[in-house]
Image 1 (tube, rainbow, N blue to C red):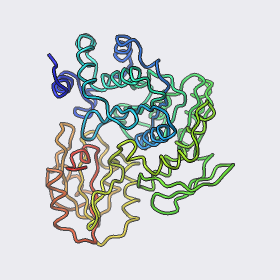
Image 2: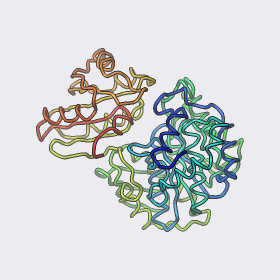
Image 3: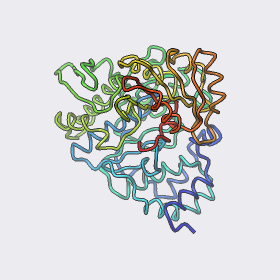
Image 4: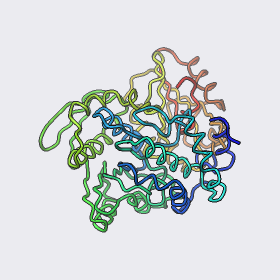
Length: 426
């Protein structure tokens, strides 16, 4: 019996392995479960147009930008992303509005027998739910973010209008491979027959993998960083130049690293316009200025307060932390405090080696099984000269940092998506 939304979620959490909580044990390295689930639902993934977004970093921000642009241009736009920060319904949205909780209850009731026969992962169920919701709500187009990898990801059931791969860097080596080439091969798995693919950033180590795969699939390949010249003018303001024009765009997603995502997004929009969409320059401008309002995106270089300035960011792998540290160094402050937490299954040494030694650290841990013990994190950080104190609870750590800081200091909170997810009043 599943009479309520909370009981429906409790059922899913209790019965299905969830990668965000338990890690690799929840990862299914094939699409068989998703195929069975979609068949049980009448293959909803074939009933709406879509854009597929993969990549190591930037895929969430890029997905939200694309959804904001399409919505502003007048299209009924679905958006599927993961993981959620505060509430499960954040994963599935139409025109920025989260999935109706009654639909979640109804979906679990309808598919309960299939869940018990197929025994899918939590992620596989959420993908099937998103496809079913978008099909039933008759969206004009849906932006679908890959969960992990690409080739074997549950989202790879769709045949999109355009595929976008943001970048390739180190993450999930235990599942995707221990070289950048192997990781790129998994991401390139979203490239479909004759479907154009955009790669936001060039990377000489892996570019050939994208060329090979796109040739095999007879897909036109676009390296956005070759086609769009984007310079940062000031925080959130960019000069954007392609062969035909130069425009100035303001992006409400802070963090200079968004510059790398912007070219890929703009190239996807150009390709969509070539496929019959009508997305004006004005729609692009308005959407980019209001992404967080339009789509509800949180946790990307998000300002929590002033004096002291408190910023959080979900960056968690080597490339993401490198960008975060560069952004921290661009700030003006007297003292730097960092509230840091990590998960167990990351290459911690590559992250810790990048962090500033002149900061004072508060080592904490999220309330999930995958969280690295805060004391162990402190001990491992000490090897890299990072000093501070252990306060396991995220919000207590932030509160203590605020007490120690003066109005001219800077507090950064991050290291893991799950640390950001536990921030009160985010």
